[in-house]
Image 1: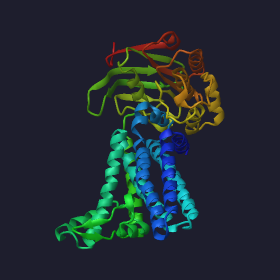
Image 2: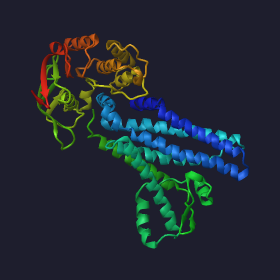
Image 3: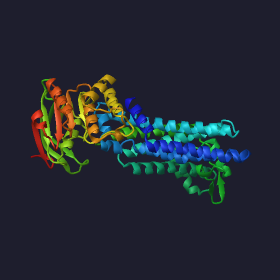
Image 4: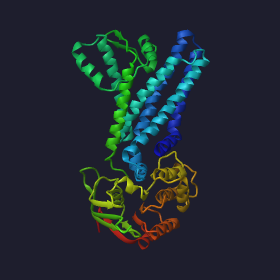
Length: 268
Length: 203
């Protein structure tokens, strides 16, 4: 707990973290101001799409940076070595460092989601439950990004770790989209077997019911462009509970892999 | 405490797994109440020897520290480690750094406060990115002094009066002290024995 608490405390005071957190809040509020000038569904879509953009772009920036800093620089600089030489098992050190970062990711999303709910209420849309559920879905996606970045940071530098994690997330998202296209029979049947196999094995990006519906209408903006293949609009369905659990399980496996690979890493 | 605190034969450290040797052929026998200084120019492998002893640099030679192989968690809890340079995560206050080390080692906040005082840290509530290098070295020393360890390992310690006093106190109570420095000053006389490294091998 001491490492988790210390890491979270240190990160909470870092300028880059506070800047990203506040930038997200600013964009959500700006979306609400814009939505206030519109009526009905337009107002709701504006509020939701701006908040969803923050959850995606801001979430990727926060989760990628948090995960990518889990090991490398602190290990080369001596900070991780200082934690290890206290007699704390290496796996515990790594998992505690990741837990501290997860805590800050949850705090970030909690802040953004509360601000979005307040803004929705302020423009007369109520607390907006679907947007709240979308926030939870994106939080799980970003937990995946964070643990992948943390795994990479055992061996790679921070920039490479963040980039690999972002690409990994895009791959998981693509797999979900391909599966939806395959189910809609808008891509060649020769690929169906491969896509289904990959879909069943790998972690899947979580699509919320709100995003699924907005994406189908082409109203999700940055958070989810309408999926169109060969002139056909493909509906990407909301993730099932099984998918939610499957991706969570993958997060656990990746965190375990990070702890296992950290055991032999040289430290300063 | 009659057994050797560190017994190492033919310490080897590689720059990376399977890579070129950074250190080779270093032997250490360090008993309770004794000191050993590793000297040599910058880049000669002094810090690598300390890392090998602490189990931070991977397997390298026949090494026993406090009766266990390097990196053994129970043995590490009996070691006070002062890393070189500026080994702290930004965003934290000096006091929080030392408190974390104390808590992980099973010691209370009083042990951290005592170590901060013994190391002569004057501004423990300042964040580490805002302290001068002198305070960083004192903070590092404070981390090593938490809980009166059986083995003090000091990498590039600056020779403050507090450093000298802490080393003397440790040796007087039967702890062993292993230090590495390229600019040893009065440390050789204080620690008694020394090994000089040149390009990774004993000179």
